[in-house]
Every structure is written in structure tokens, then in C-alpha cells.
Length: 138
Image (cartoon, rainbow, N blue to C red; front, side, top):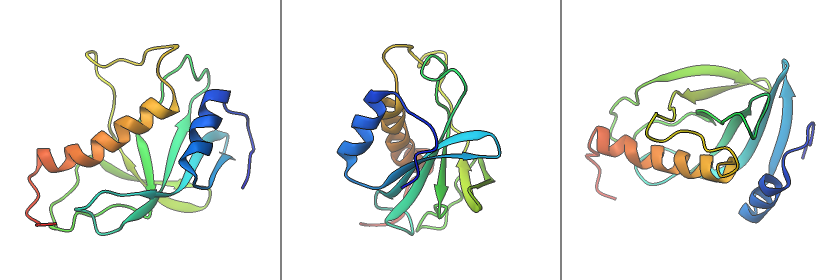
């Protein structure tokens, strides 16, 4: 797996503990962490996806934002997932989920990191079905 830039040690420990392949990639000047074969909860048409997180200049002081999926996610019940946009990363078309922290849930320097951001990603997976109820029995 490629390691084209260095992450903070806490992020490396977190990623290694996931026991999946992951890499750091620099693509067109942007730094990405790509987590391979991340599990997708029930309700989507696929069970695994690669998750890319853009590492902004200044991280970990600067917060992480959004998540990108390859292959993209589709709800099994056919309902539309809002705020999506295609994004080419490392030659593949990822699906960007435009989801952001709020004033009530800001980035907390010294507390938040890749692991807390991925907790938010897990929340976004579930929240998708509270926004638009899931018509599928699992």
C-alpha cells in the first residue's frame, strides 16, 4: 500500500487497528487517506466501499470534512441520497457526500482526528435513513 505522506501517529494506530488496507495518496496536489473495503451498513446496494478522506493543509489543527466513496452508494429502496457530487481521486470516480460539521459540532483541535471523523461518517450512513425513511426490511 502506498504511503505518499505521513499521518499523525494516532491516525496510523487507528487505521492499523481497523485491520483493513489503507493508503495515503497525493493526487493533483491534494492529500488523501483511502481506507479500503470499509463496511457499509444495511440499506445500501453494496456491502463494502473504499472511503477517501481529504487531508487539508494544517491537519490536525485544520478539520476534516466530507467523505468520498468508491464505488458510490445507492439506497436499496431507490430513494435519492442528497448532496452528492462526483470527484476523481487517483484515477477513479468517487462519490462525494457533502456533509459538514456545524456550529454545534465544530472541529475540536487536539480532540478530533481521523477516528472521530470516521465516527461521523458512520453517523452519516445511518442518518441517511432518518432523513428519508427506509422502506426495506433487513
